[in-house]
Length: 79
Image (tube, rainbow, N blue to C red; front, side):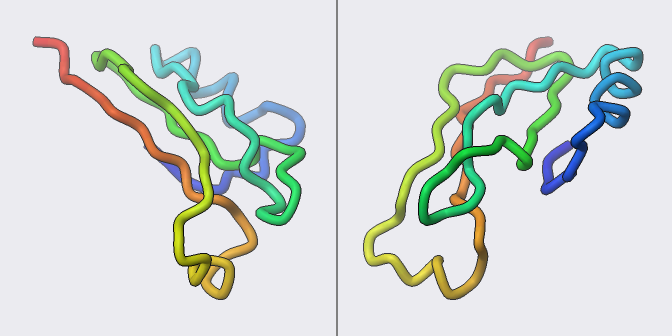
């Protein structure tokens, strides 16, 4: 479950934690010019996370599409 949650009071995150989801994207991605906040979150359940990162894409054409940096995550499903 991924998206821009704008969950400043952590209400959504607390509810998802109660459902056994875990926030694995604790990287700063907003604003894209100088990332200070981790408003974009990826919650997982029954998955192993290998890598999470937020980075600029070259060329920097994504700056036209969003004011957030993209988050990249490498996952494996647990069976």
